[in-house]
Length: 273
Image (cartoon, rainbow, N blue to C red; front, side):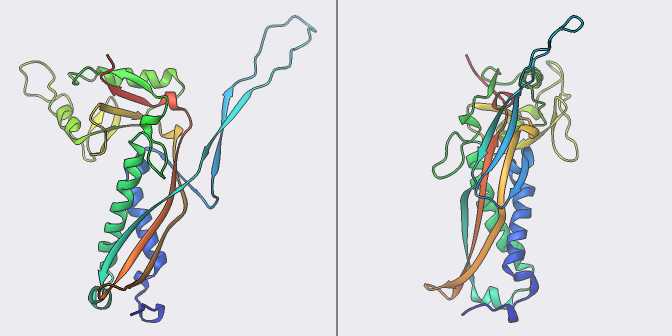
């Protein structure tokens, strides 16, 4: 069976599938929520960096002013491919209402989101982008466990020292739970951190939770202005017959890249000593 445009509801066009997957990825991906998302239609994108200002000096009247130059650099980001494949039955394709798009898009976006975030929070990924553990980040000592919020305060100032402003934290679910149970004082039942409508806030910044944070990392401090997630041309979705079963395959392909414009401005909290 071949699905045709003439007998398919508008909500089931490949373009709508792709848009739905992209929207879901941007809404749920840790990388998309903490980094700056940049779109491109090119095979790579170069981000210019201004690394040093021209020098100035003090002069007497009519002195010759020395000519000085600034210094520049660039970060090259090449989006690589991540893809997901979801089988659907012909009964689903024929009989369902457009709400089935949500089910299919959720499955595809979940696969793609897991792949993106896995690479983002990792060191290196075969055939994928390098992640946070691969860069020359700034480390902050936390000890074996977090007893207070001092490491988060230290992280904010450490990032500032290196020219970045942190905008969010990334922690594991276990660490988020531990933070939520911290008390204002020994013997008190009052928690140090209060839940707000959209989650936790620590040291003035929102907390994003991911079960893909490595076991040795207590938190990541991310400066959104200096971390980019490049999405090339949006997600492409294709449908074709499943030759083994009475059904179809829906395949989603995204090309994404990650760039760190100021690695030292990214802060990792962990037990250093």
